[in-house]
Length: 307
Length: 175
Image (cartoon, rainbow over all chains, first blue to last red; front, top):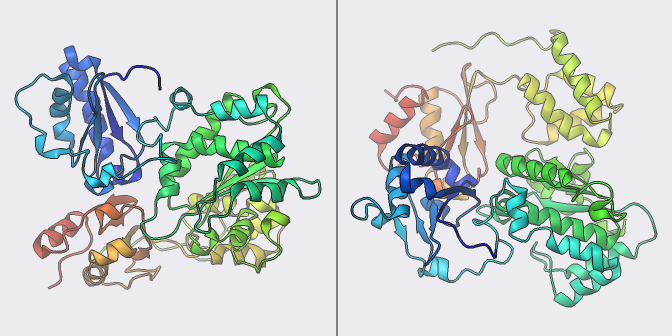
């Protein structure tokens, strides 16, 4: 984040823009850059996650070392040279003026990204880029400086709540699990997002998967869990692919597995893919599905946090 | 209308190579019963559907009752228990696509292809199924034709729509 912004084109490579032809656009950009050479060689082409306005994809953001970023919509592969011209400032006229989006539009101006802070900025397929943008820094700090009790205390004081709708305080939930009698514990992430038009889970998985892995690792440390599952619906193939890649990269860097960050903290994270059952988003059904059974909900209590 | 190649009868033995491959992927999961759904996904990738004999093999090698394996396979929508047709088309009927004319798209495709929605047998070479949101709501209405997503079908322009469906090989225009 401290590094100066290079001259770069951030190409949205999330599901929304991919379905509108983002892959062809990105390939055309690479080809056009090779062909143009010269000043165009100085333009970095970066694959990023969702740039928000999916209905007008494919989207590309243009960053300059100085000045505000610009966002272009409804692009086609044929417009790759025009985009590079806009980046280098060469070329005649302003061919893409009509496709430039207004960042002051309420759609953008009223958004404040918290969970999706890195979404559209970080390359979701590169752990090095994620680390450069701050991923895993908190995990390392937590493992080096805190006991699990201190982590839970901090989360409680932060006022963090669940994002599932009920808004259950996260710290209390972690306490409930941590204070159960000794025994194996498991952290489960519910990414079985099935409501129409709801894509927040997918955005995190496709755009900034390392943030999710880091959060799960901190949760596992705080409650004393050594295994975890991410349950993703099978309708999100790109999210599954990126999450699997991110897990592999994190294992290779020693951020998952045995003896994480040089201390005796172990965590095995696995992806479990759903099979097209909407009801599996319900927690008891989801837990049944992770265990390879039919996803039928059961009455609570006992709550999963107690069992 | 071209007929698809005759489908294997349910009693036909499975190819030895696929049986061996199934055993191998069950071993990769260390024979854990909780990996059942994962195994079924991979077996379906192998055959294109879940043949009865393959379910029996999975049950045997994961040491589970066949009823349990069949129960799981029939519970989840993405598992197919019948052989798929040569070509498949999925039409999204999620909220956004439905509002944008997904229902009309279904009626038109049923007419063009001479089949019924969600009939696994289809017309012999094509089957039409519905899905409930592919996450491309901004591009509604969408189709998936043999795995390829087709965004923004022009429902309001019948001539353009017919031309687009013709180009996709989805049957002929209604007489």
